[in-house]
Amino acid sequence: MKYTDKLRAMCRPAAAVIAASLLFAACDNDEETEKPGPGPDPEPETELSFACDVTDITASSARVIVSPTDGYTGYYYFDVMEKTEFETQYADNLQVLADRFEAMVQETADRYIEAGQVSSIEELMESAIASQGIADYEYQTLNPLTDYCVWACGVDLQGKVTSDISVIKEFTTLDVEHSGMTFDIAYDPDTYQLTLTPSGDENYVWGLLSAEDYQQYYNNSAEECIKDLVDTYVEGGVLEANLHTGTVSASMILQATVGENVVVAAGYEDGITTSVAEYRFEFAGNPSATITEDVETTLGAMTSAFYSNWGETPEGSGLDQATVMLSDYESMKQLYIDV
Image (cartoon, rainbow, N blue to C red; front, top):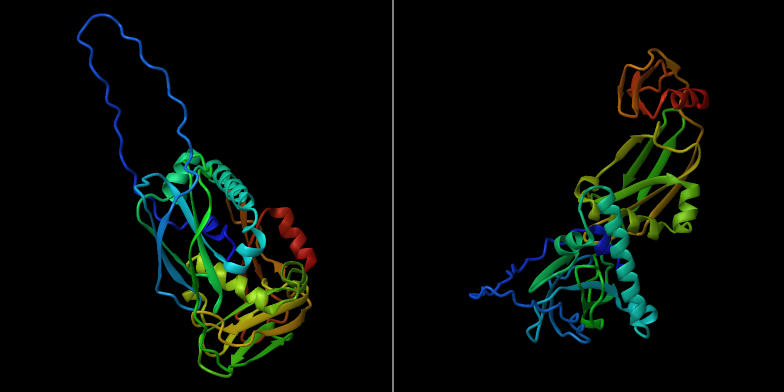
């Protein structure tokens, strides 16, 4: 897991806020007393110590519980990173890690402020990033049988690192129970149907993307592609809804990209449990269509149009009529020309 994953996920519960009040001494005489000016900024802590416990370790998750020691009551941040990544990229220059953390906080704050979700970087830090007192976080996208380290440091509400960064715990994830389940994947260009048939009854995940994206983003690695797919499902809270068993059949109309497409599939149970299957097929394009009605309704920038008469409708495809959402009428005409 990259150290920015938790920050991007924005899943940490809001830190407990310690209320403070300013006490003003009343003066009995009528003469105005001179108020002292602001004192110097407190010196940042150069070194903090933390207690850390890692529990509920599985092949893909672990619960990390952290609390400062030695009476420290300020804000701090902690995260998990693969041990090899920490040792090769940051161990000899922790300032690089501090700089990257601060840059990521600022980038996240700018995005959330622009979206109107927070009003300031201070609000973001206090509600979603910084911790105080005892804090815990469950990591859910770890790799099986991998060494990890927990690192921590003091921070302020402006998103700045205020202490040295230190490794406070190491742990190793469990291995998954592997199986020999395989996949029979086939595409029928006459019916536009993609069919995945596993050899067993285990849970599995699958994904579809263009061959161009497969090369650009994953360098044709089925393992990297399926791992990213699972991570996306987990972080979006939709993994369970995307676990399948048994045969799956899906229409590629309005899903596949014209040209070569790639399908990846693998068993999943707390981690990838099978070899990752890769299947490629050529998609000639969506079937010809006739526009039967002009735009019916306009909702914001989205326009709804009806397409019917798909030429020779594939038997069993249920495509006698389909509703397609388009950005504007010009796009609708362009899509009609393309198909």
